[in-house]
Length: 329
Ligand SMILES: CC(C)(COP(=O)(O)OP(=O)(O)OC[C@H]1O[C@@H](n2cnc3c(N)ncnc32)[C@H](O)[C@@H]1OP(=O)(O)O)[C@@H](O)C(=O)NCCC(=O)NCCS
Image (cartoon, rainbow, N blue to C red; front, side):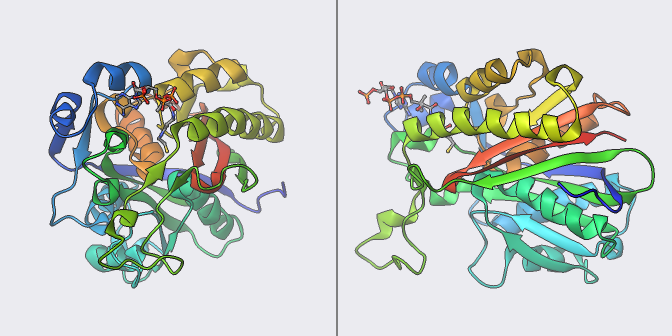
């Protein structure tokens, strides 16, 4: 990896989850599932669900505003907004454009990034390049999704996802802190459609006969085997890039697919599970929202200390995956 021209740090975080809670017990009443099975196998107790009036950009804009305030910036200081999402408000304009409008952040260019559950990690990596190269000083990266809108609420796979948004401000840093390494990967060689939303795009436009294709389809075994194969590979690579060993990591803030995936990953990389942060019990998998919501929670709880090494890792449909390490400033 080339040396960064300028250091890049996270100068603020924010998040937002909708008020409505769907517990496992409630899901038992609408889909064929069992609340104990969900908690024991996936680690989820409840998830938040957006109202019919809330689009992804509504969640994203609140999270973004909170991150801007946490960084001590004004909305006009933001020069670029990247929204990672799989559930955009519309195909055009971008959700980033809606967020710019809702935040009155008119000095910012804005676009969306599509890497499904790895989207926030990919977004931070893109933002870092602009800051490292001196193009921008303050970039707002948001991971936001409303999977409740692409869920078939008659099927048992409805248990996996929740709605939510998280955000971070990435800024230039003059001192010895910030991102130490990024690695992004895309592997399409094995079951690339193990998680997919088949309809509504140019391949299969929706019509009155195929509306069920608007919902996500998941092969749980393919997700599990890809995640536990790819996450350790990316993590070991960023440790090597940063010249660190796993014992140097203070916290891992990973994507939140299932507790079993995280337990297996921690075992494979040799990280004690108490260093692996999770909140899937409260929010389930919010796709691009997982890492920034969890980061905001840990940051606001005052857990992150100057000099801590924090490991991010994510996997998503495709399979996109990657990892990153930041020295907290
Ligand atoms: C979901 C997961 C726990 C299922 O484990 P598995 O061993 O692959 O399970 P199977 O699909 O073969 O199902 C085995 C049994 O589990 C139970 N089960 C599966 N899904 C269930 C659900 N949603 N609710 C209740 N029980 C369920 C059923 O009893 C099922 O038996 P059946 O198919 O005869 O009814 C596992 O595949 C996994 O963790 N995958 C990762 C999924 C994930 O992280 N998704 C989110 C990111 S995309």
